[in-house]
Length: 361
Image 1 (tube, rainbow, N blue to C red):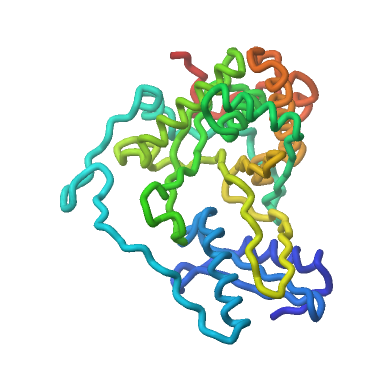
Image 2: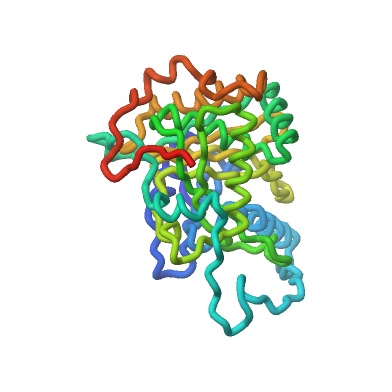
């Protein structure tokens, strides 16, 4: 237990701890701290290395922690969680004992992704003089009326709100980078088998998704994004003979799902607190969370790659696109988000070497 002088100092210490590398030669790679703010006020902070857990793991992990705490309060040993009977699982794409076969990619991925997926999204040149607190995050809330419009667009396109927001992100990235054809990384959950719903572990694949922000009605771009996401998910993980299997993405779009319900710890009042982002795993990471009446968009960025003013401009552009598309989903994206965004974005800066011009198919 560590004494903290106040909540701000505690959260600053948590941010520094979150940016520390976790050694992988010890088991398990987990960091835990309990801070005491007052005799009856504490902050419990823990960090899990991604090699042992994904974002979905936090739900069952917190539930298990609350269950064990309740048992200790009652003076008894925690009962082991009831396990489901396990069935023999076959490897994806083949029979037991046989090597897995490469699967054919759909047309939306096959030719273009094989050639271009290794390219990173052409963000502006790195910034100089950025060492400490290289990461930063920006959170925006989609207003309730715009969220309702996003849900209507999603229903008409027979998709989810994440797809609609991803389309708006593609439009914002297009204005920021000067490209209409983008390939980003998307984490795809692999909890599609019975018995994996409550498992704590890294059960996801990072797959390439081609986002189209060309001159077309926003509703049409949503349908294209839906086809691209479904096609990629259906063929995840990417076969090893495709360049995408070895690509290091610098722009990620992540679906955080719905807000987790607060776990019940007997005798304790639990409150979630936000920890500032001081590290950065990617150049730019968009995270979408469904909070019920509103949607939340988190933008995490590496200060060495994206300036803070650009982050705010990109976030404001996403909100502007969603608001305009909510009013008229059939409006062309060329009429959306024209305004102050260009003040922070690079005005069609030259593409980095190795990046090809957008191609039409």
